[in-house]
Image 1 (cartoon, rainbow, N blue to C red):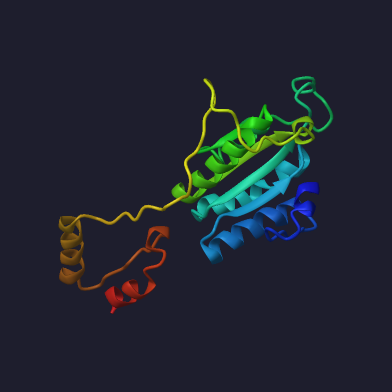
Image 2 (tube, helix red, strand yellow):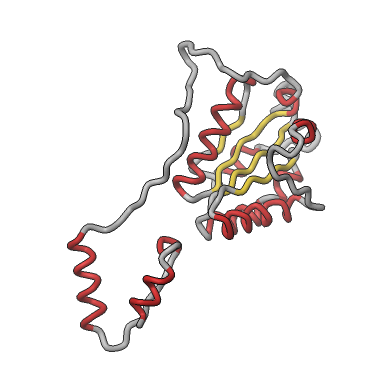
Length: 200
């Protein structure tokens, strides 16, 4: 929160009254803009409150990244106040990418991967950052050394289209039918006019 304040408007930040609303807001942002939605919560109870909105995003195939806190690394496994096994908790809703940071040098890469995977797979991802790690100095340029991983620059999305044989087969089914019903899913996003033309 302190870092967001110091960013002085470099990114849009909306502070809701409750974590559940934060996840639904991130999901709504992703649904209506096509951009990745991001929500945050503290450890334990706050992180748990995100789940409803995150499942909404997962089921509607929209990209949302959840950034959640965790108790100090030295306290983990000791039944510390509000300690929850967040990796296990988020494994279903954010199964494509859920990781807990253990070093400041990981943060840049984890954020980058979480956003890329959320956008590329149109899904929910999650990053867990223990609170003692949050107070350490940021690592802007992680060292290029054995055992480190670095992401590439930029992101381009893929456009998946069926081959010409599959399109011809679909056209044949539509043209030979008399009472056609069309079930439209998230894969047809952005093709609203084409769908109207097919229905006509």
